[in-house]
Length: 458
Ligand code: 5AD
Ligand code: SF4
Image 1 (tube, rainbow, N blue to C red):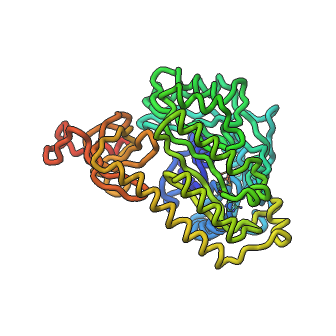
Image 2 (image 1 turned 135 degrees about the vertical axis):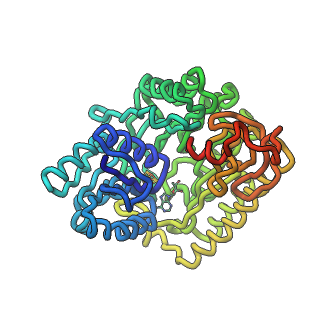
Image 3 (image 1 turned 45 degrees about the vertical axis):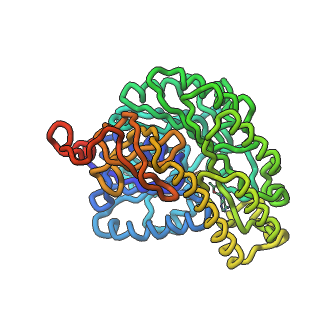
């Protein structure tokens, strides 16, 4: 059987797309491998969100090039850089065999076949809209042995944030019909999945026949679904109905990723975010009232064109007020075709050193806040859904709390089980402890070592 290696960059949408690629290629006789060295086909599923993400793709391509020279390995590029660059990428990188956009994932086997049989180089980057696009269905067999799964709820984005390339790489919003989603959820639960994460670039503007809040209720009513998460949300579409779901539906996990981007209204206007800081804070207050203890996480951009010291101070003030559980923060990166890139000289380019200094200051504070949340768990018991062996020590387990805190622990629970863990240590992004009732000195259940059993499941 021939082998394909898929290197995935970027967000959960890309992770889900890579899973669909593996499934589609499997139907055409390809086996997935985890090393490029033994692959006959290498696919890069790319991200274009910042310039750095694009540079990473180019250097990865450079690393795969010798495989092509030595063994004639075919190289394909999918995802957002593919959609952005289209056929230009074939010119820029002569050893790339084919380029395909995110909407072409279902057609991947056919594209690969043509490349091989007709010996052509192809760029397939047509966008499909709601009348032509069919969401590829997940094959549940590939989720067997896993506790969690992503389920695509919608694709694309209709917002016009001035910094963001996504509308140009993923197109307009298309929502997946509610029955298709529920069908996929049922089939995933049947093979043992316990936690469903609904994904979409702008998932809370879902419009597949019911509101997003109603979609959550319907997923919650599927027997066997234990936990529901979703990502990513725009504050502008955070409805009262969605907030109410957090009060009503315990299966919806107490975590909300709500990218704020900046704490300054003046910057938010230039970002075209369509909310004010007060409005954002009001949403959070209502969310926290609906679900006390809910973990709030965010994304923040510093060094956006025209950002003054006062604007940045407002971002720091916001961070102090909200005290985010976790936050991803970035230096603004101008992206092709976006409004901010066009206007940045008029608005005022923030010097690189200033942006770096702001990022360092912001991240130090964010880390302190994260650590406070994580350290407050020490000595308490947290509920963990077991996902597999710990990444750093396969003899331990790994899972997440309802708030999405990562927990590595000693224990003997199987993947898919929910257990209580006594927390002993904390870092700003993970907890460590021991499963309640587990004796660290007792030999593993069933005679064989835990390590072997879990490694197989993963
Ligand atoms: N520069 C820097 N960060 C960006 N993001 C999106 N576009 C850019 C850009 N041009 C960040 C935003 C978004 C996250 C996924 O990436 O914070 O929420
Ligand atoms: Fe990267 Fe955005 Fe594309 Fe995801 S949607 S892969 S974050 S550019």
